[in-house]
Length: 219
Ligand code: 5GP
Image (cartoon, rainbow, N blue to C red; front, side, top):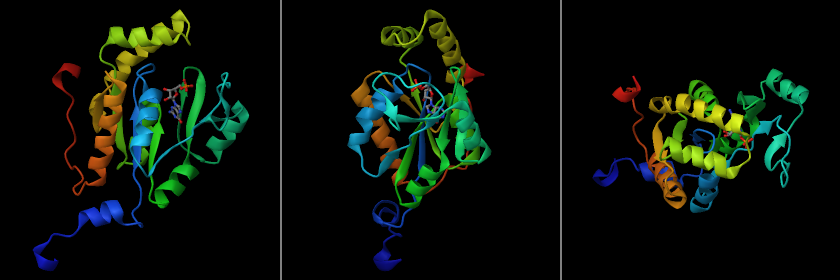
């Protein structure tokens, strides 16, 4: 310890070019606004790479191969699973989605943080495989607001909307397993809250030994 100063964690955590990156996951119910919030968040911060998932769902108008997904046939996707090329994968709304492991490993190795924008099942798989991943749950202000958002984007049928609202009820029960919950009542504010979380995690010294208990209203 030189001149009575503590070890310089800022140098280690923030400036040191040899620092390994961290894995961050943003998850939450369908319709909560993950895409929009992340679009606002990415320009606010450096050294964060958004992972591009593999999927079997068909391309929508305006989408291209590799943006916003790597599009695969079911048999190609199965091969990725067999080769253990996916860090996690899940069936979401009748299609398969998965996180390519190589891009994540390469970017973490380069010292960049990696952000996964994935569903709640995927987040829980990541928690098991990468215990020090930072899990962030994006919350809607209320059920009626989530329903309004799902209906106004009009990309789903009535049945699909009902299904997603039911799923959302179960997914909200998972909040106690997350490190952070961010309310998406206002997109720029939610993006700013994400930025605070990344900055706080980059300054972290102690990792939490205490498991979080579920709030009593969820028990
Ligand atoms: P969409 O097809 O509408 O872009 O996404 C549908 C859902 O799949 C979203 O909740 C999205 O977060 C989720 N998703 C996208 N990529 C992945 C992934 O790699 N793994 C998992 N588990 N879910 C994903």
